Amino acid sequence: MKNVTILGSTGSIGVSTLDVISRHPDRFRVFALTAATRVEELAQQCRQFQPRYAVMPDPMHAESLRQRLAQLGMDCQVLSGEESLAEVAAHGDTDMVMAAIVGAAGLPSSIAAARAGKTVMLANKEALVMAGRIFMDAVHENHATLLPIDSEHNAIFQSLPVNFADGLDAVGVRKLILTASGGPFRTRLLSELAGITPAQACAHPNWVMGRKISVDSATMMNKGLEVIEARWLFNATPQQIEVLIHPQSIIHSMVEYLDGSVIAQLGNPDMRTPIAYALGYPERIDAGVAALDLAKAGKLEFEAVDLERFPCVRLAYEALERGGTAPAVLNAANEIAVEAFLDGRLAFLDIPQVIEDVLTGMPVFEAHQLADILQADSGARSLARERVAQLRLQAEPAE
Image (cartoon, rainbow, N blue to C red):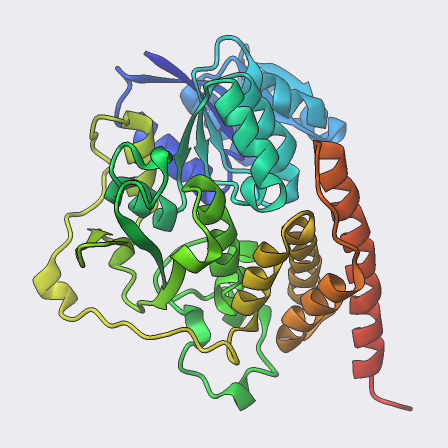
């Protein structure tokens, strides 16, 4: 029986993780659940899965949860504060940690799990985007097990030989191919993108996801972040990572070998597949996912990424090439820009503009500790907010 802590249990990844766990009560026990603001959802999860701990960073939300659980007659210890996220992630009784807190907020607890030598199921790509070297050092130095949850990286993990850590060249790998759906605007005329609304950007054709990652998919920044993540997960150079648009989202990613072979992982677009793979690793367990019917799928299409339509992919590669704190700056600027877009304060096409302006305007330096990353993140967010305000002012009609 393995104790599982889920960081971000009320999000889409957290909910899917609990669904898979519920299918295997003889293998997994929920040890701790955490959420940001969704008190009632977390209370109901606690009622069903009976964790020892429930965490909400904000004390007011935590108190509301404490009262709600008391009404339900539950004996579950409620913790508050950001440090409590790291506490349950590193707890001595935690075996596995699903790191599914979206954005930079998930970085400290993800690193805490790695430093405690846990099996880390990483759905929080920002941990590697912002602090790739620091995070991977924590994994290696503390003998943690790192299992990627992003469908693309999980697919690559499944398609690589077990000794890929020896180096991609050493195991005969030529390149890693990350597939991308292209999002909801892949075939839209560029002239039609200026008036895109948050609702349109969040209407992904294949996946059910949160609002932030849905916008990242629409701009394809999610794929840019995944390029940076792949660099650290698989010790790859930028030149060894390619992005290919595959609208059907059936092939989740591929590995090309020196002998001309291409090995791919296929499946229906359902995040329970990579989650179940990680939970059961190295065994295979039931995920509750329907079998893939290739005859029904019909055809599988591929196309190159149009960098004019998706400049965020170019910006991500540039940040990766610059190294140091540049990826953290990229991520921070994107989070602020996407937040402003979802709030109606920034046009869709201005998202990459804000990111590029911040990347250009921020100094880049080597990060030797987490404090260096957080400093760069804070500075980039301030500059991004300034740029959003400037663009909003420029967009207002003159009186």
